[in-house]
Amino acid sequence: MPATSIFKKSLADKNDFTLTFELVPARSSRGGVYRRALEFADSAVADGRLRAVSITENAGGHPAASPEVMGTEIRERGLEVIVHLSCKDRNRNQMESQLFSWDRIGLRNLLVIAGDYPQRGYRGHPKPVFDLDSVQALDLISRLNCQQGDDRRNPMVRDLAPTSFVKGVAVSPFKTTEAELMGQYWKLHAKAAAGADYVITQVGYDPRKFQELLFFMEKTGLDLPVLGNVFVPTMKVATLMHERKIPGCVIPQPLFRRMRDESRAAPDRGRAARLERAARLLAVLKGLGYAGAHIGGPGLGFADLSTILDRAEALADVWTEVMDDLASWPVSAFYYFARDPESGLNLRKESRSRTQVEFRRSQPLSKLIHRVFFDRRGMSGRMFSRLCLALDRGRFAPALNRFEYVIKLLFYGCRHCGDCTLEETAFLCPQSGCAKKLLNGPCGGSRDGWCEVFPGVKRCVYVRVYERLGMTAFVNRIRCFLIPRDWALDRTSSWVNFFKGRDHHNMLK
Image 1 (cartoon, helix red, strand yellow):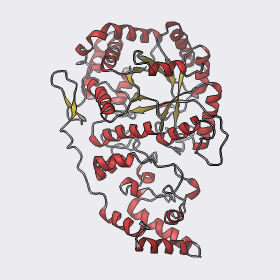
Image 2 (cartoon, helix red, strand yellow):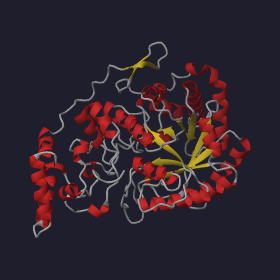
Image 3 (cartoon, one colour):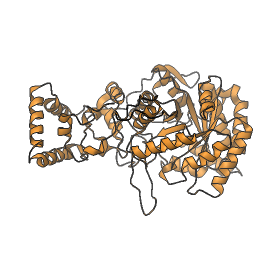
Image 4 (cartoon, helix red, strand yellow):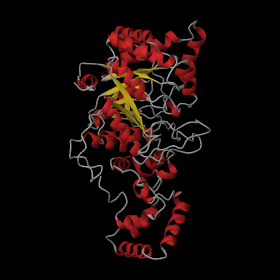
């Protein structure tokens, strides 16, 4: 029986509420953190309620023990493992190599994420990789899962034995602005099209936001099992989240104040109150119709988890009565669905609050120039094509390359990648505008429209794309899969590459 069968079967079973727990390896392969993780796994096997533990990969962008080491030991103890596969530290070849290794040793449950931006390590900050984004990584894994002979990653490869990975993805309904929220929801559709098998939400505590995600998936025909995130922070971690120092994780002001007061008043510094809140959220998620829950938090032992699970079971029939303690999302934040005044949750109709985006026209001059010079059906496009190809064959090729670069640097912040995607991204360059160079929609780390890496300084490029395109055009853009950047084209003319059919417009997808 494949190692993934129990977890996968649980996800597919509508009557089984799938429970997973997140373990975070320390910056060491030994010591108390590692030992406690193995002890936790032993207790979980004996208890039998957890279907799997997930193991992070360099969480927060900090180096830590590789997840497959702990994962192998836990799996040998009889508990299934989900390993995080992030895009921040590996190029595509190393990622594929890692996948072959994990498949060989039976670690086939994945959570595929872009990953947090790398933080300071040995002698300074490391170079971020992000060679693939999460959608492209899913496409790679889906092709590896293809039956023999169907692998179209590389037309030269015909004899790869298929892998059998189960691919999870993340999504955050906890966004305050329309542009960020719709970016998350429609990127989830792109992930599903690339082969996602299940979904885990980002950290959050608002029942209405949790329900909104399910309603949106139902409305748009997206049928994937979803695990809600139940995170139990320490007060220190809660403070970091509230101060926006942990990307993508949000604790609103009212909830933070409540947690701070609990911490100051109770002898246990609010620990019991935080476990109770986690149990209430777990009961709410089950009541809302989630397929399961993904539980985690620093310093949680199995006794804490058992307390949460037992208490949630006791609250299962009264979950609607315990929602008020969790409802703390800013009232001014954007919701896709209208509020139900009776239940305090959502109605299945769109909200009228979609007024927070001040739409801007998408660079009419840039669009005109692109249509004139790069539409090969028109006379001007054919003439410009012949000119570029003629110059590229002679001694003026370097001058043409430099001329293109300078023009696009002045107007678009060009990074000279040789494969221009300006037309697909509302004439905003992801190579210069996105810290992670993502081509297929936003990451989950933005907050209030600001980039995860440069908060308060640089706005998320996909928020700006949304503002230029509006929802309909943005949805069409996100549904258009962009292949990874071809580094063989780096610092070459994207004009020549376009006309020669070497760029993403003409590559086999």
